[in-house]
Amino acid sequence: MTMTKRFGMLLFIVTAVLPLAGAPGQAPGFALPDNRGAMVFRSSFRGNLLISFFASYCRPCARELPMLIELEKKYKKRKNISLVLIAVDANDSGGTAKEKAGRFLRNAGIDHDYLIDMYQVVIAKYNPKKELPAAFLVDAAGHIVFSAVGAGEDTVLRLEKAIQSLK
Image 1: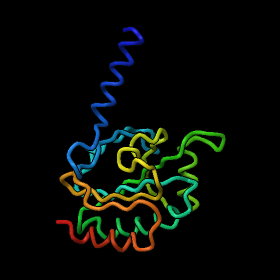
Image 2 (image 1 turned 90 degrees about the horizontal axis):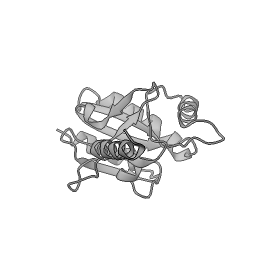
Image 3 (image 1 turned 120 degrees about the vertical axis):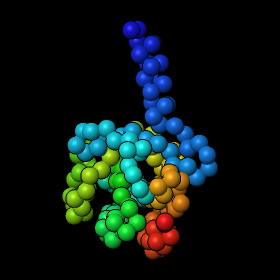
Image 4 (image 1 turned 180 degrees about the vertical axis):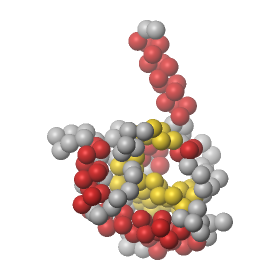
């Protein structure tokens, strides 16, 4: 297979797996590696998702993530919530995206799996300005029912109300 055909095939696969948002309010799909090296697809999750984008350089993320972990614990069974952490760090002189995200979470006292969006393709679909922190609540039908971009003092309170309203 020629290089051009391989590139075309790869482009087709990526666009098929990572579609644009489509209908208003529909959460974009994604395929990202996790911290263990496995490929994870949004479509593989069942139930409601709390998606949080973070980076090792984001101080507000360090304050928000522990509260999101607590929301997941509180509502995991009652509202079928799963927290999906997505690191948007890039590989650079500070280390690999995976290393930086892992170090950041350990320093924040967080022991949770995470996905790596080092090319910032997925965050651009959810949050074109790529502002952090960014949290999205996706219901079981795949619709974004809550979003909060940037640091806000009442974000977690508003998010909890949105979670409580889920069926």
